[in-house]
Figure (cartoon, one colour):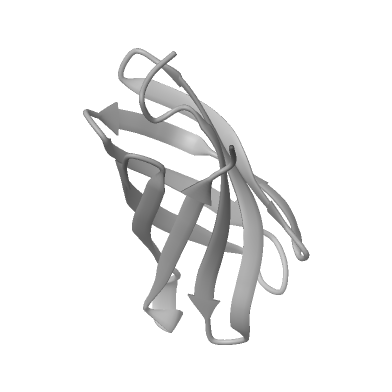
Length: 100
């Protein structure tokens, strides 16, 4: 099990207000799979890469509009800090805490 694996209670600062979600990370060497599940549904991690404690991935959002989200995060202990780039909407801050 890698230091980045786990489930994180996250909040993303979106244009529609704070979006709460649970982000799961299952690493395998220098890649990972998982999902980000919240009130708007669940998005699967695609192209997940692990570089030490830094994660990069994309998610294909369907609602409220089709869009590829470009994401990155750094795991420091049980804290996650990252950004989600949402096309024309710019970057949204994402923070989280690993579930105990």
